[in-house]
Every structure is written in structure tokens, then in C-alpha cells.
Image (cartoon, rainbow, N blue to C red; front, side, top):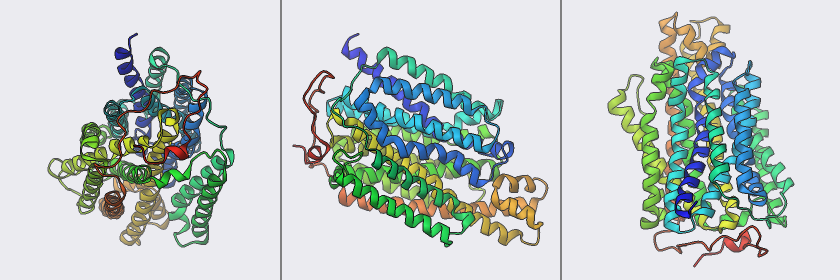
Length: 524
């Protein structure tokens, strides 16, 4: 097969693999109401069902990127896709919330192997900067579409089948991607990649796990409780230990000196903020549509289409504008649009019109995220040569998943605290204490009670919107702070640029690639 034909097929393959695992990040969101009822899951359990996947994904993606570089990107992609298909199929058979959480962790482990491998394959296949930017635009569009179309596809499935179908549907997608990988993706690897930094991996997993656990459990324990404060302190100490270990390690899992390069650090921060915003929004909006607006699962999912389309278009546009206008201008604009959209949403009422208000809000949000994602990703990849693309792609993927994990945990927990307090304020004395406690723990319970008592449904809507407003305000302010940081730190149009990477070394070459430390220097 000629190279001109081969490269588009490689791109289609990795985009399909990316689409499958990103669908899984949000397809479950539209099923949360049914999962709450079928598995007797409260808000806390629902947060873990969503974030179990995100947490495993974020915690392991750095290590998996290194392993795929060392042992081969093609077999890593095949192994990840087959494991993902298996775990997803078993998840469809889960009968308790605990089982589903465990399987979501397993799915996240496989996704952590798939995601950095796809981006590494792109970096090694498309060596010209403009071609690479265009390929990254397509990859970014598949990523955004997967995240944003999850609620749509999940809603359609729930309209016709049970919640189990949202997992069954992902199995054939992963298997088709596996077959295409075997048929079209060439092998590439970097045998000189050092052995896995196990101490760094263990500490990073512990830090992220403790932080996420502390945030999710915060509403139940109390934000000022000794357990919560100890959790935050422990997570901070583990982060400091991780940095210390990586700086001293001969072959660190993450070369922390890379963050001295603003193309790397500021771009990573921008991606983290953008996906914090997106995942937090998707977690809340699907419940808003179903519990407050009383839409069906399909109706709720279909109403997220404006976000999906805007992300897809803006991701491609961002890939084209980045090399021309400069990463700083495009990413700063994207974060500003993203922040503005959330501050706008925070001022919305219960019965705000969908067509004239919600759709423009979603379009503004999607355009903002698309303009951030692709140029920031391209900026990160400029720091490392293709032979070490797994490192750069894994950091990019880790920032996405870290942002998504914290977005669900933080915004979900902030919402849960505000919602529970407001509901207690509105319904104390109107409901038996045990019913009020159950309604505070889960929006699904409050909605079920509200079906029989209109006053409870009104209180649910008010409490939900108060929690949504506070959560969106937090996101909006964070995005605007990120925009200021991007404006100050990201390179402008006149910054050193890389028009083309050197042709990647073959797997038989004995020449060692540049180290991450030398690669972090300015590139002429």
C-alpha cells in the first residue's frame, strides 16, 4: 500500500480508537438516572461510576505512554482495544454499583493504554508541522465528538433498551478499531526508552487517588472535617514527593523540567482547565435535562448536539489557526469564550428557553474548547521529537483526564453540597427526616418523591439550579484565570517553531533519541 493511501487509513484508525474510549467518558452520564434507580446508587456512587474510569485513565496514562513507546505502539493499541472491549462487555453484566465502579476502573486502565498510543502514532506518521496540525485537528475532533456525543448515543440506546446497552454498544466499535489497527497501522517503537519508573508511578497514582477520593467524599464528611483536611494535606505531600522523586530519578516517568518550557507547561494547563470545564458540565447538564426539564434520555442526549458539533468544527479550525496566528492568540481566545459561556449559564433560570439561550451557550462553550484543545496539544508535542512522542502524548492525555477527573469530582461535589443544603432549607418540616436525607443524597430519589408531591419537585428544581449556578461560576472563573495565564505564558506567533520533525529512526536503529531534558530546550 502506498504511503499516500496508508497515512489517511492510519489516521482513520486512530481516530476511531480515540472515539470509542472518549464515548465511554460521557455515554454513561445520560444513564445516571436509570443507574441510580436500578443499582440503588446515590450521588456519591454515581460520582464514582463516572470518575472511576477517569481516575484510572488519568493515573496510568503517563506510564502506558512510556510502555507503548518501548514495546511497540501497534501491539499496545491492539492490547488496549481488546482489553477495553472485554471490560466493557463485562460491565454490561454488572448487578451492583460496586461491581460497576470496579469495572469502570478496569475500562480506564485499558483506555490509558489506548489514548497516548493513538497520539504517538500520529506524531510518528505525520512529521511535517502543517500536516501534523491537520491530523491533530481530526484527532481532536474525534476526541471532542466522543465526549460530546456520548449523551446522544446513550440517550438513543436508553430510549429503546436498558442501561446495559450503553456498554454493549461500545464492544463492536473497539473490535472494528482492533481489526483496522492490525490491517493499517505500521509498527513503531523506541527500544531505548528506559524501564518504567515504578516509585514515580506508585506515588502519582496515590496522589491522584487520594485527591479524588477526598473531593468526592467531601460533601458527606464535611469540607472542614479532619478527614477532609487530612486528605488534602496528604495529596499535597504526595505531589511534593512525586516531584522530588522525579527530579532525582535517572529515568523519570515524567521529566518535570519539561514544565520549564512554556509551550509545554502553559499548554498542559490550558488543556486541564478546558476538560475540567467540559466534564463537569456534561455530568450536570444531562441530569438537569432529565430531572429538572423532564426530558427523556434521548431528548436529553440530543440536546447536547450543539456542543458536539461546535467542538468538532472548532477543533479543526484551531488546528489550522494555531500555526498561522500563534498558539497564544488561539488558546487565550478559546479559554475566554469557555469562561464566558459558563458565567452565562450560571445566570440561567429553571425554564430558560432551549433554542434561544441554551443552544448559543453550548455553541460558545464548544467553540472555546475546540480552540483550546488542538493548538495546545500541538504545542505540547513540539517539545519532544517523534521518537519520544509517547511521553508528550501521555502528558497531554494525562492533563485531559486529570482535568476531566477533577471536573467531575469538584463540580459534582460542589453541586452536591449546595443542592443538599438548599433542599434541606426548603423542605425541612415538609418531609419526614428519612425521606429528606434520601432526597439530599440523590437527585433521583427527590425526583421520585416529587412525582407525587409538586412542592417537592419545585424545591428540587430550585436546589438543583442553585447547585448548577455555583458549579458553573467556579468553572467560569477558572477558565478566565486560565485565559490570563495563557496570554502571559504561551508563545506567540514569533516564537521558535518547528516546521518538520526529523524522520523517525527505524526500530532497528541503535542511535539513541534525544533525551526529554535536551528536547525541552528551545527548538530552532
